[in-house]
Amino acid sequence: MRFIISVFVLSNLLLLSSCQEKVQSNNKEDIIGFWEGEITVHGKPDIDPQYVNLLVKKDGTVTNEGQWFNELRINVGTWELKGNAFKYQVSNVVGGENPNPLMGTAILDPSGKLIDGIWQNLSGSNSGTFEMTKRK
Image (cartoon, rainbow, N blue to C red; front, side, top):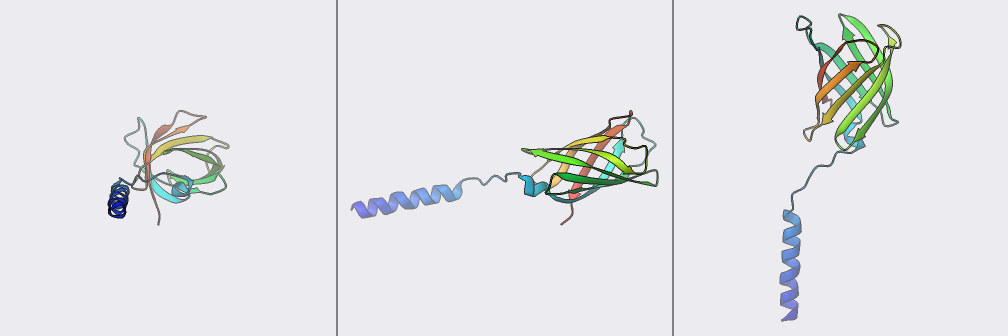
């Protein structure tokens, strides 16, 4: 009888543990890779969204490439991920005024997108929004 009760309790525990909701955790591996998207500029509705991408590397560095009125701009810097909050800071190495530091923040959502992105030119007044999708 003890054996049957033990089997019953064990099977119920296994059933309950298999039914628990699986929550996707964001970790650094989720953010590493190549991201593509567009930026918009606050207060300038006459400017079309501009192409931008990020290459987020395992070593903590990030390369940001974009266009600003058909001028290629390449920026290099660092990134961090705390929970699902992504932050990066870069400086121009090609195009624009150097070093022209930029900072961006976004949320890494469970679908694998960077959403609610905000960027800011730290040496000027330009800022805006962005959203990116990770290239598979």
